[in-house]
Image (cartoon, rainbow, N blue to C red; front, side, top):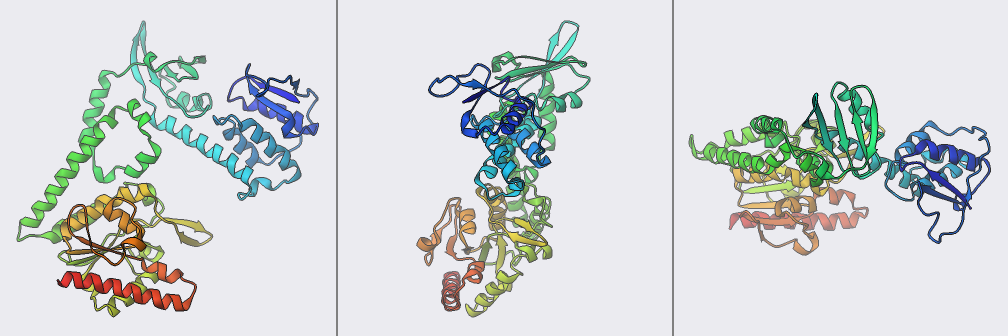
Length: 462
């Protein structure tokens, strides 16, 4: 058994040198104990021999392996160094292993690296300095609680960004201090060692409140990328809930006013809502998508259809249900005796979510955060249109309307009341019919879909 004692939890260079020497001598992964500092050798306290001190042969590994392991070594996973050494030994026998994303070990190490890179990004995005008066000047102090051992790796970013400012970054593991010329390290700190705030924050809060626009708040991104533990570092986040509530209340009031003034001008309210949606950045789906695909149809329609999200053709055309699923939908509407031109058609999610495979863009199902981020638009559309009956086409649409998971098989074929009022029916999405492999089943399910549409049309007529 060989023991490798690394100097710090983020000692990648120490791991790399020891791993090369061990791999050169053919030491199998199960014969190596990796530890940091004076940690116990192993679970049973058995004595362990030191790592070999022979000169490594200098065998080469792909650049991708170095980049991957440099990040993964900063993970807080206690098995990280053992995993990386196992990957190294296998790589010597399988030179292209690092390219095999189906391999469980490669996937696990890749996940460690991604988690570390995400934590690095969060530190850069959410850390806030606060001014502290010192003899002869001021120092800016920040508190941060990383999930991984990323503080030293992130030091250069803050030196480059704040080169002319004296600052300290305090974390539970290590503290960094910059005096405009030299970076020094200190022991870990406690949150109470950092200041709570300074007068500049009040100025910043006033500015933030004045520019706040809820339609451009990346709600889904905030939920994913900025857990609440970081909110205390950012003075502006304390304003977000009240600003969202107040701004949305004002927008709802504007919509209601537009409905009642100028002869009940719902068209103007809908047009304003659509124009605002064109600039929506509530979640990150806007980045790769071509455009927002908003709903269309009469704003006084008694029947509204809500689908999942735009597809490839909808994303390019800027209109809902114009692709293959839209053709199935139109055919079913015709057989059910429903004039699409008299209905309002929209989607639960307004941007196309996809995976790029070569030249093709393959549909990818929206997640809960993305559905929730777009619920506001659906609520405003329904508030303007006020349909007598709303039909959810698929599980995503149903979740958007009801705010919770709905089982199509259990809820299909019966009327339900929506939380904010109005009647709703749930059926399958037309794309489900396209995916059925058996032609006989396709015919049967299409007929059932038509019957669902007939039930909704009958509910409108009653």
